[in-house]
Image (cartoon, rainbow, N blue to C red; front, top):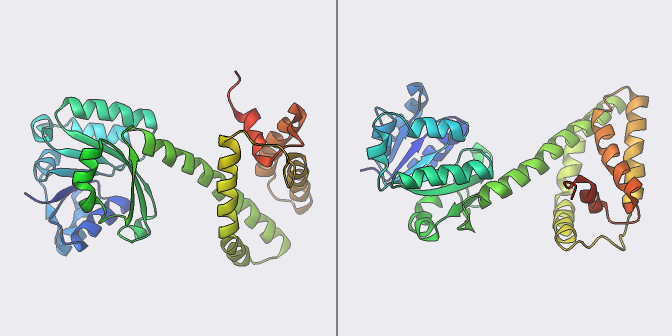
Length: 290
């Protein structure tokens, strides 16, 4: 048998398989379209003739495909039920916490162990010491496979037995990144409209990374402890500043969609009486109504 099988050879799946090969692990690979395996096979990976053969080839199966329905479709293919028994499935595809819990129940009924993970990295970072992958599930199963999985990420982090926890944190991070990407592009529009080099804006944001990290930790603490009083700068002040972004967009002739969206949330919080509190108090109007 090989040491590990990787199913799914897109950009991320190929990076995972390549890291295993570089780490000296006998690695079986399979993808629906066979052409994606060629470069890995030349590097030393072992091809499988089908999904069931790929699962049967190794005790641990790392899956990285488009989503959880695609994973289930592969694991429901012909001959898979017998192949899965006694194997460990490590799901590194993107999905929701509910999908993680549902897949865990389905896989374990077939006699396989299951770990659910979230990759917090770009494909080019796989295999590096500082790369983070979050993993949830049975701790004994995790510890048994930890050394192998650490080939993929030096900062492999066990999140606990609750199978959906890694997906919860990945989803939360994706929520942050979505606004980060949109917000950065809005800033780029501002620079373009005013004749400022966008690359210099990117460098400035990069230099602020330590401060932004401190701010994120502070916001997490404030929200977790409902501690919004006595701010250094009030929600109302921030809301007023964000309102000026709408004004600037009109003056510069650029899209105001993003600043209007942000300004509306801050305005709701101010109107609800939270203007004198911390910026993070906007979560009070974002939460579901009681």
